[in-house]
Length: 385
Ligand SMILES: [Zn+2]
Image (cartoon, rainbow, N blue to C red; front, side, top):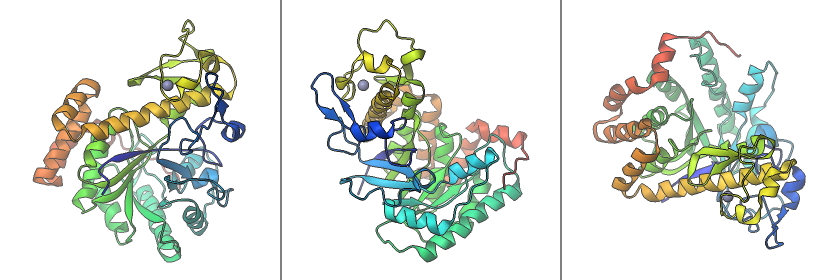
């Protein structure tokens, strides 16, 4: 039984690779200026400066590669595939039409991944509460796709995860009751905003109350305030995973996490606020093989290296939380010192839900969910379908 929560770095390209890394770099890697050794960017490879066990790929980006696992040594790597629902929604928001066929998506997911997230359409892309009609349409979209998945799946090695969306108890109940008939191997949840620990905990404990005790994936979320929550919940739920692409800011804007603090970063390249640095302020396995020159130079190498360093520190934070959670006194002390009060609220909520049941805890803590209150007072009229 796995008692840890695993960070799943997302790749957003046609082939799995670190965000911002060009195909050429992904293929060639980089040469350490200190040892002359060639190193890979792909964190699951033996020749990467550090190895990590999980990867998330999206059908939407990688669909043109029929089988990207062919010919690659992916030993020990768990691959989770997102169907592309999030990207469909993004395309819709941009006014573009997309046409994803669920059979095709499922087939691709079965070839390419160990865990397949069902083809969903998130409901919380927007700040406004969507209309009840829109909610029903998106729920029906998942229901119909689940039927296709149930009927057409033919690879027992690929676990399928159902999806829960919603903004509050009423929506979670309606959503869950509609799609619970599908007996897939796990569940995933999409909660927005993804950085709010209490909001995410409310949704997870809702599923816990329904008897979900293993195989849970939290879609698109990360950060210092929520990672402790996943670690804590892995005491009670087996095999929790959560994906993130935040580390990719390294490639987008040359942001570089300050070692020991995920919350504060430095900028390099043409956006630098550290132009007088003589050397990098980090000796992680990536930075041991780079100099200040690479992160300052224009071109894609510096950005890819920053992403790689950022990923290292996010993975380290995740390890730290998984270790600390077994010593609750130390764990809470850490949270008091390094997280916002909302993280502690979320832990208290989880403890109360464990002791007195979900409903009692929900009623007591929902008032702390500021966004919930705001949405109740500001209902939107947004429709996408
Ligand atoms: Zn580093």
